[in-house]
Length: 606
Image (spheres, rainbow, N blue to C red):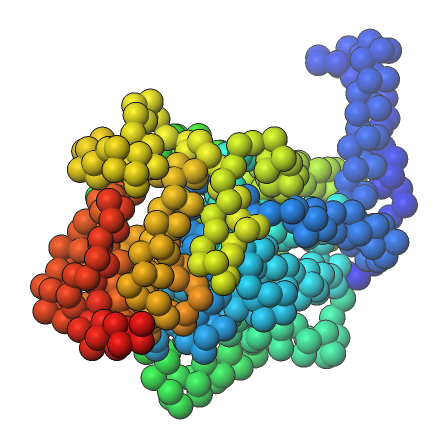
């Protein structure tokens, strides 16, 4: 491979065309064919010109991408259309961080430390509010974009594939869309999964895609970046960490051009993680929580037919995987000699290895995000450009246009909805009927707007929660209908719960066995209680009840349910709850249990 730019002659192309059987082509057809070939050659030259810096165009592209985080900042409220519980989980994690609690040590969480820390840092910097879920994604964005610039630099990618990759990084991190949902499915959930996919992809691009420009300084910078991102990824999302580790092993074992960077980065990360793991038991607790979550998830009986978008998502993902496989076969079959065949075989092994490992680990699934397809597609594009530079012919460069198109088509089904969800998040609260989820009066969440109409298939919503709260309808009848909460129900539920706490357990550390762990934000959350209470409870093993209840002064049990998880959770802790707590008050919506000592002290304080 040479460092020389593509010849200027690649900007042209053509020659006299001929029809089948040697007959001269029609002049119009000849002119059209010549024009198409010239266009392809110009596109190929633009995509393959890896040594040109394109600094001005790159700066303009990054400036244009900044519109997405700016729009999120300008949104007056945090808008949630689906799965309201997930928003409260993220906010509770940040509130615990503010109160000095650590995941795994003080409460159960399948996500790494950075999930809680990002939301906690957002609250410390910008105040306790629902917009912490937005700031939590924007805080690391400059670092992630800088890492993306380094990974796609050194001539690895030309301007247009590079800008598309950076756009994918930005919208994947910023977007409020449910990962496998429609544009309007705004939920602000699982940022740890989105960050994990992006960090893993950056690590694999920088170690698997061959650079054109090499230097000791660049190698040191890239190895350091790989080490830091690996450590961050470990404390972000375990599945994506394993995916990145598999990509690194491919870079080392298959002899990629950046094998030294992969080795140095992996070794430095292993030393850092090993040292911290030896000095404390935090890593062991983290792994234990992740394994518990995986076991609970694996034991659930998931009905894929119940998900409205599963078929579409599977089709989109399947098309992308087929495109990757077809490109890999084409690259291998198009080899002219042993050198090209060996290079193509190495690329095919990496491409298929990354794709299959992602499928096996679940890093790319209908419940996550197909962002990872960008890695094998970039590898195929890079291998095509290397072959074109070695052959130095126009025909060799033309397939780069096809692979650039595959890069767009293979990632667009996820990235375009992600991008469209950002302006939707800005406009939806202005045009949709919403309810504000206000928690305890001392710490309101007035900037959390919940959609009034829950996107469920049920049409028999005959008993609004307000009727249960007023006593006009029974909780039993509500539960019998097996209805999901609407956004408008949640303020009713929270207001009733806070009124009950204000009368009977003011200032207590409260565990709520509901979707809303932020039930009593005015007090520190109890140690042991988990913001992931409902995780895997249908079929999975229950959490340790002594750990769950060890620091709670009071427990709020909902009389109505969003799903059966609350009932199952209550059944599994009922024996300990009735042994260590007493029922002190209830309403049509809540039952309040308190430790006898805490209840006695509260009575004396009145």
